Length: 282
Image 1 (cartoon, rainbow, N blue to C red):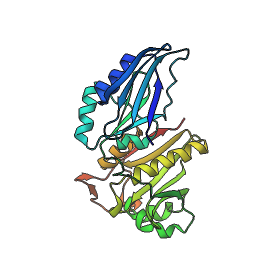
Image 2: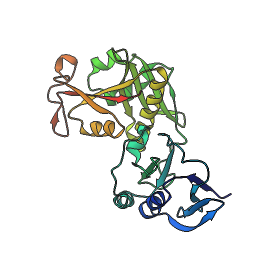
Image 3: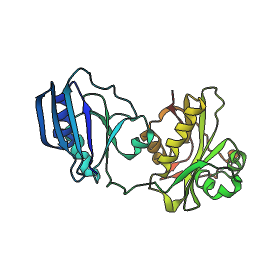
């Protein structure tokens, strides 16, 4: 079986230039004035698949949908940087937060989203991972909870709040995400999340957040809130890449009165203040 993806456009020359000169697809043929249509064939290297772009006829171009994507797996960061430089436009925030952490998203001249991924096809696949609501005793997840919370008393007080999504691989839970009421009518809170240390760096956190976003949206919430330490620059980078925006700062959120030992620091930064971020669901 071979594949050709055909798409209509009213900006044929601009769109062809974007995919041929920017993305780097090879122009392998086309036609002019065929029953009122013009078209160009572009080949996707290494796949045998073609992208056909057409113009003319009685119908206009399709309306872009925020979840309709073309995803190009380019192999490494350098290849993504090279293509991004050729495109010469700024990346945009994707609708699905998974892609914010996974690659760079651009819009072609028609407004369709194109994602550039710095991996080889299948190298980061999570096809064997099952994500679903956890129904067991929360104490069974305590070792994961302890990765996310340094205060034993805060951990104990909040462990049973809300609902918990878990990522399961070969029958073993390797990550969790806790969603709870936030105290405001329009928002839910991502209360805590952690990935087992031997499973980190594979996209499990991104996948859990993407599922949480979908579940919270279906629940009718308009925002998903999360709080993280201002000292934890890794977490701040992670959530902002997924589309969360800074909302407020809560000073002195980590004190001995709340169960945090004196002198705690992250990468040399004292653990003191907490940053609240929000993801718009509506």
